[in-house]
Image (cartoon, rainbow, N blue to C red):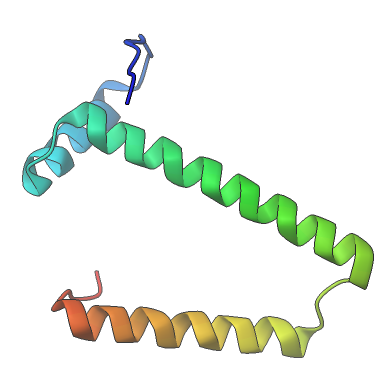
Length: 88
């Protein structure tokens, strides 16, 4: 994968917190920041899909939203129990 060096400006306390998180994970700070940027782009793409779907089919009902939230909570619980992770 090709990489490109860029310069960004962040609040000093944010950089310190990110550096600590990267150290805890044993990854370079640049990898942690890149991962956060990738997640943001995936979220944006997901929101675009939802907007398109709702434009065609109408807004989600409260019942559909509740069911989706329940599915996500169940998936989170399953992941946390299988990975040995604890909720923070």
